[in-house]
Image 1 (cartoon, protein in one colour):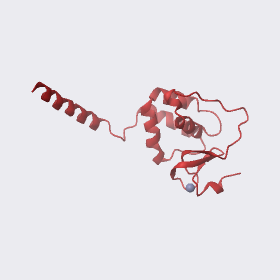
Image 2 (tube, protein in one colour):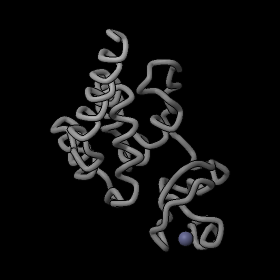
Image 3 (cartoon, protein in one colour):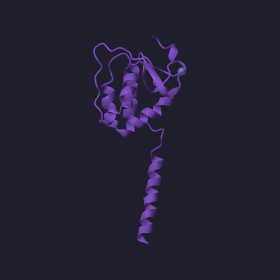
Image 4 (cartoon, helix red, strand yellow):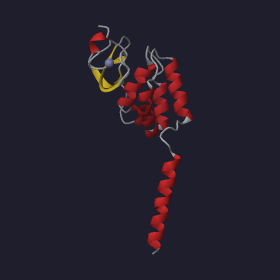
Length: 143
Ligand SMILES: [Zn+2]
């Protein structure tokens, strides 16, 4: 009997906590970090990519902000940040190899990104010269 009562309370707790944390809630730290990156980047964050970044933030807010700080360099901090998050750097599991002094854009980097041309998110986008391109618009990227 006691066990049943406990279980019922447990269920109620889970229910109330899940209603408190809505998916649209943006932590202040997250918004500040993203706007700082956007200011210094040639492209803005696509609204459809925001949940992806929010998920990374929730995985490790501290690591997220540290990784963001470390991305505030180069021509496209937002793109660099995306690459680092994709690699799981915010989780502190892998070490980031700093790019050489004169980095050459690699035409064959694939990952999750928003196409620069059609502005649609793709899981297999190509990172070319700091911008993402979907398979159909890859040919429009600068050589
Ligand atoms: Zn496209």
